[in-house]
Length: 115
Image (cartoon, rainbow, N blue to C red; front, side, top):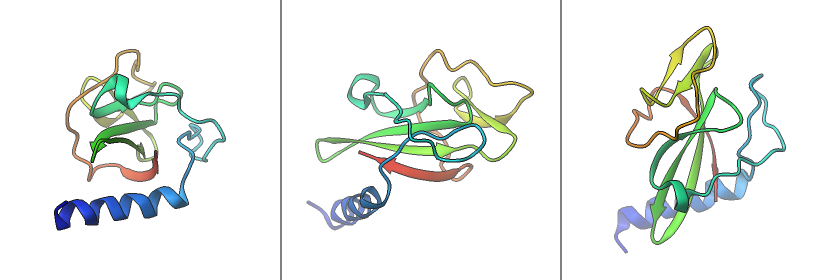
């Protein structure tokens, strides 16, 4: 395993020890609901949170194990599966179809990691 892989994996392990919930209410608080999404089924990439249009997650396969990283859009914006970005809208964009691909992770704030 390369130095970079060990370093990344170490950060993920530390982060996962502090955060176990994936749900976030639209008011911005963390909920006790766990997002029921199987990363192995939906694959790597960015996907809308099925229960909250202001949140989304990224699935990534690292050393043979799936990790789910949860994100929140900035206040007043929603995750758009079609553009794979947080957008300002008067209502939530439809999250019926999972989005895949790459998103600029510098836009929204990283909220938590869920294994």
